[in-house]
Image (cartoon, rainbow, N blue to C red; front, side, top):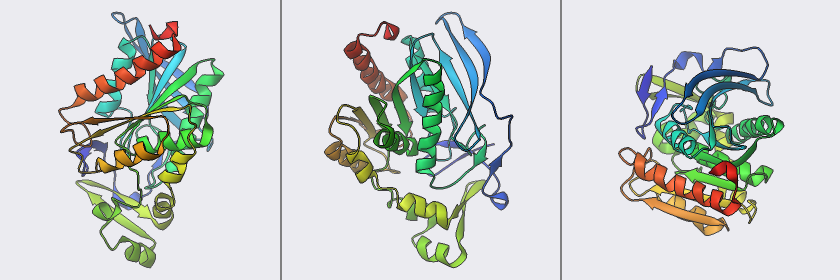
Amino acid sequence: MINERSCGCPTLSFSTHALPLRRPKFPATNKVKKLRMDSSQGSTQQKIVILNSHNENLVGLLHETGSTEIVVLCHGFRSNKNFEIMKNVAVAIEREGISAFRFDFSGNGESEGSFYYGNYNYEADDLHSVIQYFSNLNRVVTIILGHSKGGDVVLLYASKYHDIPNVINLSGRYDLKKGIGERLGEDFLERIKQQGYIDVKDGDSGYRVTEESLMDRLNTDMHEACLKIDKECRVLTVHGSGDETVPVEDAKEFAKIIPNHELQIVEGADHCYTNYQSQLVLTVMEFIKSHCEEKNDKTCN
């Protein structure tokens, strides 16, 4: 079942009385399942299951072109690998002859695990498991891209692991202390101290915010994290000027502190780039192509 959250992005719904949601367990093994062949592009789409560091299976879809390089795509809050941005960007990358992998973080989509409100560093570790999986297959993840919360996750990853040369942040939030009251109510701290959690209704679905998960978000400092990103790491931030979920000023703050940074504002676009998918994909692909030209890597051609 699909509902619409406050930013207008589709998300899977689930009941509030059984929270946090726990995904069913699959056998603890990395698996690959070929789904289809696109003969016009000479590529396949493969469903892949990757074990994370918490013994949970992460489910993803690899747009396989045979290139050595892979671009990994990370979805946002209460979203999944099938979100429109993830699919459109993956297809565009695939058409350039580069493999792309979009996956569900733990507790989201088809992946195992519990859904939590915060979980930023946990999801960065999920991303690390994905990158290690491909590294063990002698593939090279050269670019990671994330939308919204996923944008914060890829920046946190870059600040922690220092092994990815290119990062794309789509509409990530700079100050994670902001934007909470809109979802939880302005008295959220008082309420969560009283009962230990807040149940949030969102259309026909909802989710539970525990005190622990709220503190995880409040204690995640994007400013400090961005200061730890290597100067050699190229970072692209893309943001819509009409974003009412995360204001465009956040993108400008990232631009101030990340040393090797490019900022692109998509005029008129909202948080999910409704009616602006073409402009978004074009901006992302220009950055990716510039990486390919810089590396002069035949796998990018």
